[in-house]
Structure formats: structure tokens, C-alpha cells
Length: 416
Image 1 (cartoon, helix red, strand yellow):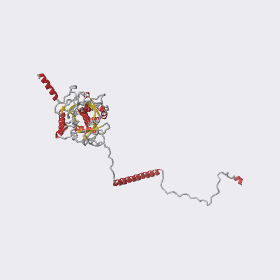
Image 2: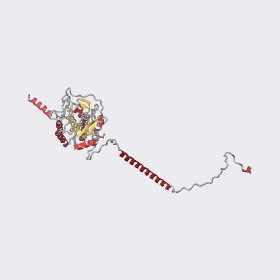
Image 3: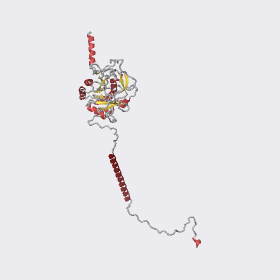
Image 4: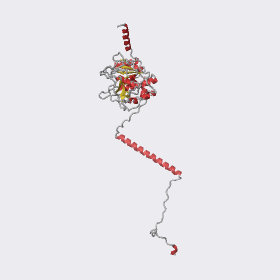
């Protein structure tokens, strides 16, 4: 190989090694024949309405904020990303970039975060000016059976994202084994004021037994479950005391390869919350992770109580227009529990209390009426006294002659 060829080869190797630079549109490798592609969608952009994307975009769009998406990579050449996807890195192979996505799930999550707002697409990113840093934590193979990540891979990915200057980290794929390495990576991100938003996982059904997800179950991580258009929890969304918020995650129109798709999963929900955190970072700048978490929690739209919903549905508009407070977050209203069955003793106490309250009310009304009557009588100079006896009249022993009402009275002159 000549000197010129060696230089070109070295340049290519150097460019591949420099993770975190923008991947030029058109240079991204084409998808393999067996990779997932976009499909026809219904066009029902209900998350755009629920998240008030058009209203929020008038206030903030996440410009200048870098959001790391830990999933299967992101297809950078989708036109709705408009060149805002970086090369990223592969935490599985520990080499190469992550700006392609043969499996498609990472592109879906990135789509709800940063897809450009257009009139001809139902896919709309909540932080449509944010930059995406893709980090691959799943093998780039659509036939692979892995649906969750290894703890050590997630730890590498989080550390990589922090090193590359991510402002927000979205862990769209959970692990189901704890590890000191993963905890240390999360702690390092929190220490640098980088919020970690993690999907609660999609093994919440009875047959899947709802295993504990990591890092979602860590105290300082914002764990996110998924809801549908009606506000009901996604049937596969995992639940537990660790869930902090919920967001759209059923039949969500989003990006995939060079087209669109409707997708389900808590990874999408985590993408929406991550985008809301990006809007906060873009509007208020850097702040402690605890303040970001509090702002998202206190601005959330309340839902029914339970370990599936956390503080409620993420409310990006409320989060962007609100302020973080050092006070403890308010308690959310919950549905009243059904009354417990009462025993005989309880029933007797309730009956006695009811009768006593009724008698007291009657006595009060009687006193008020008597008082009013006395006041009125005094104004009319009335005094109480004994009534005089009725007059007595002598009644004749025999009745008098009958009086004929129609007869003419006798003329006294004629009688004389």
C-alpha cells in the first residue's frame, strides 16, 4: 500500500474511533436486507396531543441539549432527524459507532425525543431541536433474542455518555441483574448533574412475573412506566414503588429506519420523560438531578393511585413553566378506598351518635323558634295571661214559635 493509501486508511480508522461526532447524512451505511423498515401507521398522533407538543414548542425545543439514547442504535439518516444524530458508540462490541439501527427500537425512542415537527408526519419529537447521542447496548441484529441488556454493558454505556457530554441519559433497555459497576456508573452521572431516566421494563404481565429492573429501581434514577391513549397502564408495563412517572407507550407513532411505525413499550415512555428533562435543561440550565426530578414530579398530571403510575403522567408544559422548589412535593389526590365492613358495636355507636345529633338539632331549632316568637310579641306589646271565661247566657226552657222567613210581617195599624 502506498503512502497515500495508508494515510486514507489511518484517517478512516481515526474517524471511526472518534465517537460522538455528527454522522453526515448520506454517509451512514445502508440497512441490511433483513433489517426492520418503516410500516404504515394510522396517523393518530395522540401522544402529540397528550404531551401538548405544539404548545410546549412555543416555549422550548431542547436546542443545545444532548440526549443519550441507550438502546439498539439510531438510524441517523431518517429525514426527520435533520442531521441531529451523532455517531455515538457501541457499548456491546466496545468499538464502532451507533448511528445505524437494524433492530429499530433505538430509532423509535429517539423519534419521540427529537423527530422534527412536520405537518405531514404523525411522529413528533417533544424536544425537536435536541441532539441525539446513540449508544448501542443491544446487538445490532434483528434476529437476536435479547430484549434486555447486561449490567456491565449498561455501565459502559452510561460512562461513555457522561464522557461525551450528555446532558440527559435515557436508558430504554433495562437489565435484570444488579451490579456494583452499574450502580457506580449511575452514581457518577448523578454526581455530574446528569439525570438518568430509565424504562421500567416490559415484563409486567402475570406470566412474566414483573422482575426488578435496573437501573430503574435505583433511588436517584427516574423510572418510567407506559400508558395508552385512555390513560390506562400498558399491560406489559412493570410496576413497583420505584416507578416515578408514566408517559405514552402504546401505539405511539414514531420513526423507524427511513419511515414510520407505531410502537409499544416503556422505552418510548422513558423517551418522552427524557425529552421533558431536556426541555428543562434547555430552559433553566444545569441544576441538581434532585431538582429536575422534583420539577417533573410536582408538575405531573395526577392519576389514580397505585405502584404502576408513580406521581402521574409527565406534563412537559407544566415542567417547563414551573420552578424547582426546596419544599417537599405535594401529595397527589387519590381515589377514596371502599369503606370497610362494620361490626355490631360500630353500628350501635353510629346509631347512638346519629340519634344524639338529631335531638340536639331539634332542641336548637325549638329554642330559636321560641326566642323569635317572644321577640315578636314584645314588639306588639303582648303579654302572656290567662284568658277570661266565656260569657254565659240563659237558655229558654221551651223554644219560641218558629219564624217564617218568607211571610210578610203584620201591619200594626190594622191590628189596632
